Image (cartoon, rainbow, N blue to C red; front, side, top):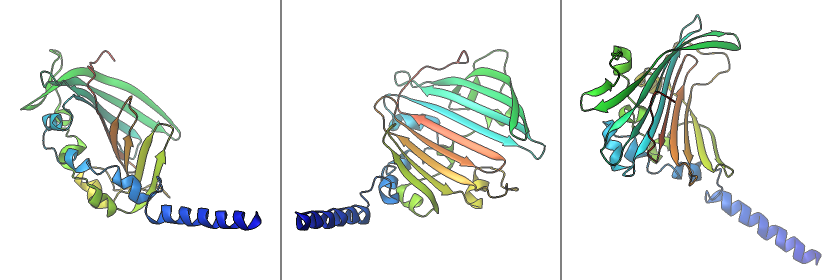
Length: 238
């Protein structure tokens, strides 16, 4: 019996080693990065309307860009739009918030929230009392200005890779280099002590809500983009 148990333990140990060796561990870098194999199809789209090629049933985009200066003053733009698979319209709202950081606290207020749509000419206001300011009108999504692929991800310096079976979702985080930060107009001029600039990817594979999320952050800037694999009408009443 003891001999049998010893053999069983040895076999089990070999199986565990083989699982890790061949990247079958769901938390391994190789396995998690393989879950983003189709990322290149999305993160090479020049126009927002190109997403209909990859999401024929429609999509929803939640995008946030935030920047704050040395005084703690923060300006944040959020865009939430949906692509209608029937008429191919892309509509939603834009929201601008201003805030102020005070050590561990932040005050924030909504400057405005208006309905917008995307056309061949770019972003347009749907509200008669709102003309889009230049900074808002020139906002582009991360998928319009970046190309990501499994091969490109493999070249980044990894912080963490993991699989969360409860959601379920895959997550990757890398060190964000200065070149990529500059390309995406993130402020990398200052860094908090012991703080890393981070590039992260999340893929939710739940049947209820499949999505891909990309985040880029420095000490003074943040860009976050979530693309959801389903259509849901959104407006400024939310």
